[in-house]
Image 1: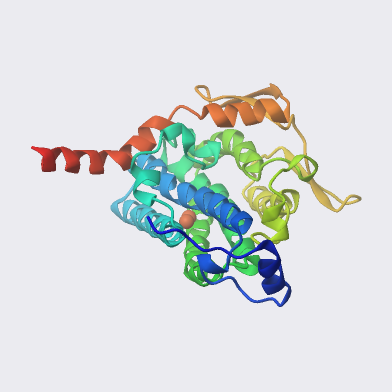
Image 2: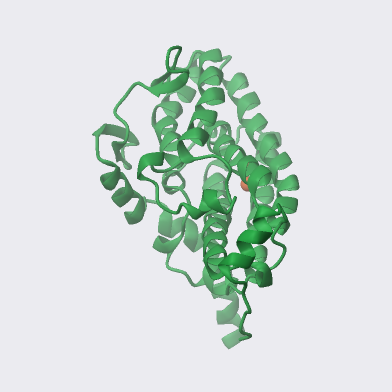
Length: 312
Ligand SMILES: [Fe+2]
Ligand SMILES: [Fe+2]
């Protein structure tokens, strides 16, 4: 193990005031390093888990062409995960441990990915909702981050996320042409809409980790990012005649949620179950959902099998 030499907080702040990007771990303060590792872990884990989560539904693709496009999205996501873990390795993180030996419950991706996508319509809505959330969050990081290597890498990631989002929109328009397709989309939207609204985390007045904004890891707050998502997701659903529990409030000039939020979620029935506190929502997230072990297991299995072969 090499010991890292880090900067003082003062030197780091001076660099940021001059609007110089942080290029390597030697230019970080201990606090900056901890913060960037935290946000990179969330990003890497989210990209990584989307691969088994999307694969679970890709097998229901109605045509070979559809299966092919779903697989190319999965391949993109693995590439995105690789970029983020690779950056963390340069920051001195043991990524082999992080990916292959970490307890599934300690992964930091959004709760939504623990709920299985079980049909082509659910995968399409995931592209339209989840990839839209990913696109909005990463565009914000791209514009604001002070960590140079990540900023440059996100140029490619952002373009691919746009493709995933369009795949969801085009796929939904196509399904919507038939009454049965419309019905399947509505059923998916009914449980997936609020899971994506809560994806953006605690409201600004309850949020911890202020360094994400202070260090320019992110530019916009949770509530601002949630609003950005609503501002395109709600009109898209309206275009397809899909009912969502949100509307634009002309007076407040923001999107308002029309149902209990935050709310209890019955993960087995994929059903929202009345209001809860933010604390209760965080507890649900921390406990993880039904597919956490299985999806992380799919990722960790290959390495375990390889090690067993080597030991024989
Ligand atoms: Fe991605
Ligand atoms: Fe994506």
